[in-house]
Length: 295
Image 1 (cartoon, one colour):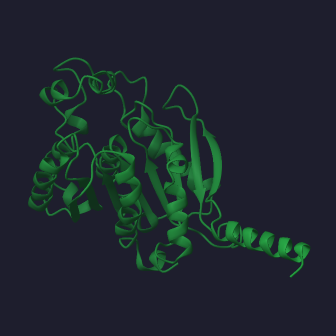
Image 2 (cartoon, helix red, strand yellow; image 1 turned 135 degrees about the vertical axis):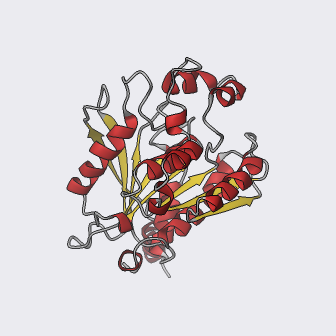
């Protein structure tokens, strides 16, 4: 083979390789809302067939980021590309993934009323996504998942709005009880964020209203309406989640909430999260309605 022909062949192989490992589709939105002082930046991952199948509608996964990150971690840490690869391989149904910026918000309505992030999620973001993108806008085709702070946010959102989601997942989620002694026992670098959002008064705060355990206890009918909950954490998690997770598991058992808790080798960091996040999403995706899971 002469050199020009060899060069052409090599270029073809490179292009084929790039095509086979194409990056996940990415779109940026700025979503205005009366619930917050400024528009929220939202990144959306589009599934592999989104542009090629204009008549098709897709399920949606809402992704809530960790306390040290922002909406960019979906793409920056390789989660979007990993999910895209799973979809292309047929191991995961094709779906949109929506990642809103929630830095310091804990994804709740703050005690001072200045930031109503939970209200934004339910009343603005979901309708915005369903109107702007080709979604299968139903409970059976809507998932939510998050990591660390976002894991707590995903579980809390699912319990607060059980009619929105068929399944919710938390990877290394903050499932400690939300009460003043627990806040005071948190590491020093977390306490300011917690007090700023949930309230800095030992009595006048919104901790109980946003405590996962109290939400189930205070609403006798919630367990019957709750979506499937999936929790994963590492055995060496620095926040001792491996010790808390079995209690959370038994607590959900008592209320007959459909769920699964997995404690496995890992710590509270990105190498662990990148490794198991696709597994978490697969565990949620099988809970979609049969018509959506078969898409």
